[in-house]
Image (cartoon, helix red, strand yellow):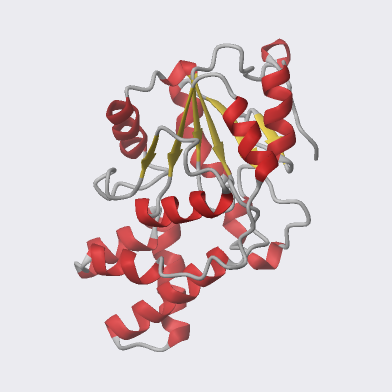
Length: 238
């Protein structure tokens, strides 16, 4: 898959109308081949193991069950166990960014987009800022909307997106959403946003949950690309 600039002429949303560009963070603004998400995953498992006094295997099963059912493992832990959200976020996002390389081409492509750029993540703002600074994109985004700003309502729930749109004064029909999970694009598409699924090149299926691949061929995915920088360069040029 390469950059895909299908337009409204074939039933796909174009970008000429877009004023606000919204990007997910993890596995979207940096490739999934970096081990950041693996680190976060491992730290969540360790946290749940200690919190509930269960085996790591049981913790991992619970973690993934909550992730699928509630949108984030954190949401499930809040509802089912009443955990300290700040302590959880501090623990799971205490990751090593040494292996994350700056991305000057992607940074330039993001900067060249006309209009406002926002990051919308189910993670924490501190984690997002650390990652953006390491990528060389710290000054490229007007705001970061994190899980705390969302009052812990995670993507893909409609409530989460409506809170995001209200918080930043975003008009959905004049915005585009970039995500690595297809299911997180269903609501944005329904609200009128152009949607782009970012699929890592050479992605290993065994590295992710099988359900995370669901919806990739759905009508709510307007565009698919494995080269985000190249895709954005073509958008800006068009």
